[in-house]
Picture (cartoon, helix red, strand yellow):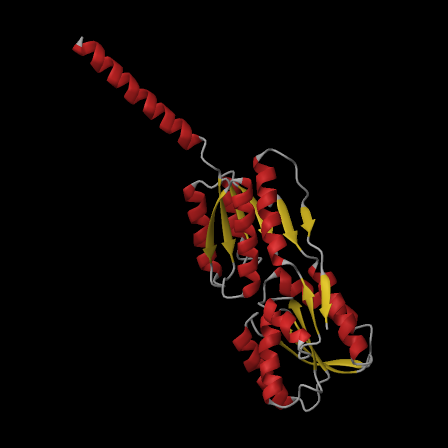
Length: 299
């Protein structure tokens, strides 16, 4: 009798173990999101869009903040690979430096999706972004019209090596070349950073007695430049165009300080990236590039 009862107990234990293993195997697939920096409202919105969509579609998501350090991001992607995530979403700090991380994921048979910024190599199943060249063109045409197609213009560039900085600059400069009476008197890198944007602009203002307009590759730099321009008492003379349509920048446009910003909809990017990851996990075929619409925000 005792042996029969013991056998039943052992059977129950084995069944519970099997059920636990079954439950574990049925757990939500994990995806990793490697973000360039969360010290920028744009990428905070991108992350939040991804988290919201992950909750909706039943995916577990882990977010890693590289703090604009390509080496840190490489380590973070390697950690995702070790953790055995099913898909890796990458917003690269540097489009070239991220390539070894993507190739490592390729070797591990983990699908990779790039978001906002592209990669210069490795196999990526899909790239989700706005058309940054088109955005640069939109900004350039608006600024050119605003200054009467003549005058002196400044360009504040984003982080070298990022596809966003490269493409926005390309689009903007394609437009500037169309108007021979517009001269770019300063072109300087300010790292997509507000504080750096202010410092760089302070130096440019000292060197350039006449500036009619400025295009910044993102709103953080535009807001920093705005602070320098206001402090110099030259806001009425200089038209400022940014890129990203962050909350602070949109408010600045409404207040009549910045004249425009190109809206990229980062929350949509984040949610689209996760929705695409779910499709990939379900075995669906996805497009190599999924565009997110742009919009010029003016007062």
